[in-house]
Amino acid sequence: MLPEDTGSHAPAGRTGGSSTGAPYGAPGTTVRRQDPVRRVGKKTGPKPRFSRQDVIDAALDIGINSFTMAAVASRLGVAAPAVYRLFDGRDDVTRACLVEVVAEMPRPDEDADWEAAIRHWAERTWETSEKYPGLARLLMSSPENYEHIRDRLQSMLTTVVDRGFTPGQAAFALDLVLGMTLSSFLGGSSVRSAVADVAVAAEAQGREFDRSSMERSDREIFEYKLQFIIDGMKDHCPDI
Image (cartoon, rainbow, N blue to C red; front, side):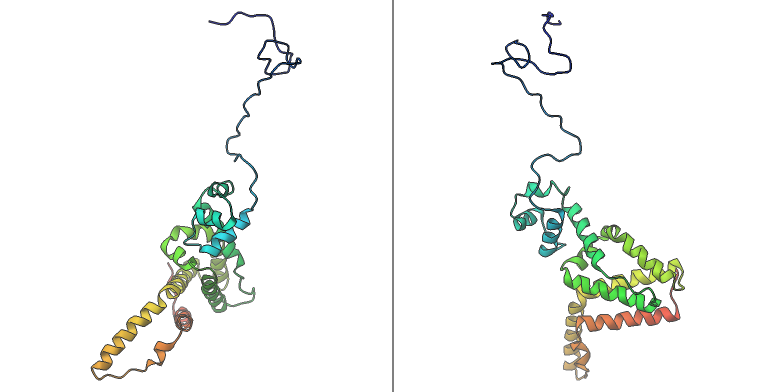
């Protein structure tokens, strides 16, 4: 049932009214404020005292594969909910970190041949993995993260194709080189340790081994593997 019209209305163009029934805005009256309209998709609250770049830097310092939103907030000296005002969650921060990391990687010289371009890409990937602990493991354990560096991958494919390879050959070569680089970075020491154990057992049976090869660093072994792949590409590179 509709209430009886008392004939008293607020002036045209105004909203709200007096809780006492007095004219809108009259002295001694209390005006009820309307609840603010919340905009869908807009984050509310005070503006953060830090930037998106601060969050990215903190996550990279902690470790791109191991940071938590709470750890990032602690590093910035704020409460965790404050970080969510700039990023939707951990995956969002990870994506931003990957974009930042890849953007730092220099591109090969425009006049570089295909061999120099591939070597450049592999070596910069290794060096970037050294600079940012956890990067290699993140890419190896979560292949979906390659989507965040798609632009750089496509750029490298184009570089190799422009130097005489088919798209399928370029894809095969770069996939092989990237996989080798990351796995060598992560597992080189473990493989050498296993080889040393085998050598000790063989020597106990009277066989002799040249141990100088076992003293090479992970980076040296990586360079040998890279050259092996490049030499193979010169003779035959499968088209996938």
